[in-house]
Image (tube, rainbow, N blue to C red; front, side, top):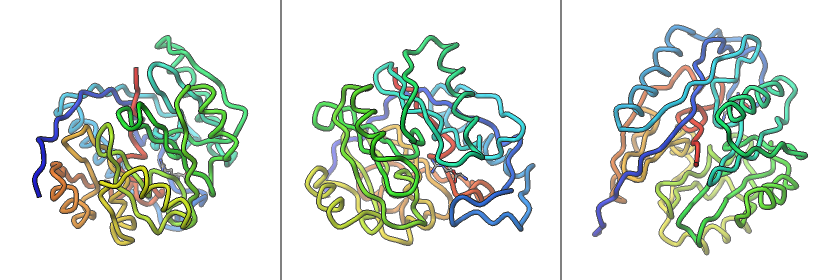
Length: 275
Ligand code: ARG
């Protein structure tokens, strides 16, 4: 198979250190509050990911961790930005509710235009943006966390078409556990995480998508961050690494084993700031 060279684009990211990371409640099937977390290891793994993104030439902002918010390390859930406009999060579960305000303050300090949401949505957990697909398209997941009413709200706030996709497998409760943008126009996804109708929608919109299987999704191989060339994914996701390499991208594996215990991996811990 022949590919034009995959070119990276410099990104700006937001991350939050796992300073107060624990698994003390269970709001997704991956969380087991009876096994203690290795906090030192979690922080070390997180720092390696942060340093890697910096080494690849990207800018990483760091949000201070707030005591009592153990899931705050999953910074992707705090908001969703497109072309300088931020659509704020509103969490499904009370345990994470206060994270939204910490993110809002960050964007306010940076002078972003910010829209507070009426409807429940978990930021980039359930929203992805493809700037060069159909002139700029938002993909949005629902079924477990984000309320479908938030999809229409996001479309009004962001002025981009939002395509709603129904998630059907509780193991893949956020869109970013089942689908990822590989570059400005293409995606990879695990079809089985979506309803049959949503699978047809994805097949129609993205005929060149890299198709993942259940094992890839279970290894959190779809919970990846790509700059258009480097695809950063969990060490367990070796088969997924091979698939993106075959499609012309460069897989870079990082060990985030401790953060998987909260039900997240690379993408969950990295929010993209789209100016
Ligand atoms: N424990 C967190 C939750 O269940 C994990 C969030 C993972 N984040 C993500 N973007 N998928 O809410």
